[in-house]
Image (cartoon, rainbow, N blue to C red; front, side, top):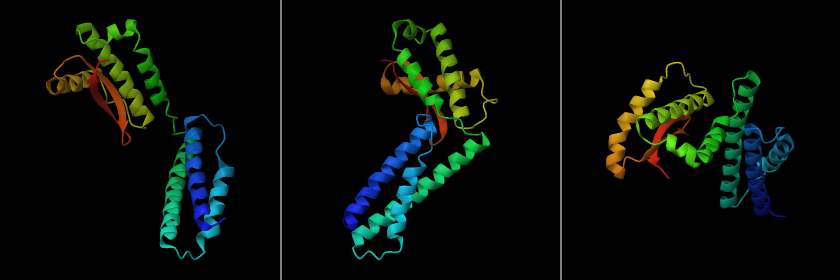
Length: 188
């Protein structure tokens, strides 16, 4: 087996390792994938001191090593947070997906309409989701109030209504770059 094939195998092993760590951090895997991590690191050590004459292969190897080092720092940081008890598995995302699936039912979608009572229930739902998102990002929630969420939604409504041409909107919470944000979209 040549160097090119070894690097392709290493690339696949690294992708598998990243996936296994994501599963471990989300709670799907019960054990940290240390055996696979050891295999990947062993493959990297095998070529670390070896001179590679092909420029393309040298670049590919350097890229793989850099990716491994970046992921290793990330994994170690999360593992340290887990040991300190500061890491909460990202249940917010799964809860949000569960709620979105549940909101497709006719009984619940009526409560999310933008009538006076529907607006209040939507504000309450967005407030709960926003607080959960902040907790999952290890951000404080004691400074957030329902009135702030209501004001943020009311501030966005006219611009979005003008942009989309309708006021049949639903607001949701998303996490971007480690920060929760309130986004609006059309009701389905």
